[in-house]
Image (cartoon, rainbow, N blue to C red; front, side, top):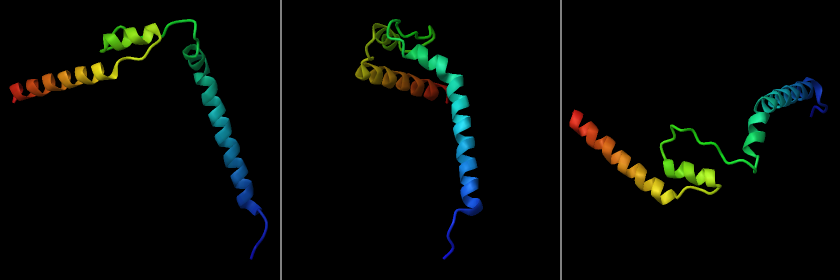
Length: 89
């Protein structure tokens, strides 16, 4: 049985170092955005083109949207899409 780290251990250390450097580089790229998301003093910004108005308002108030209402709205939209597709065919 062969003992010792040899070249495999060196390659492993180099690969881990490269992965850590790449992760640190990506973290620095997204850190400003992450800091803005964590700011508790300002309301969350929802784009104007957001499809669920009630969900956007709930997020701006600091709460969560009502998932049952969102499910119903999604179901209604799916039915409208299906009806439109049937009309086209």
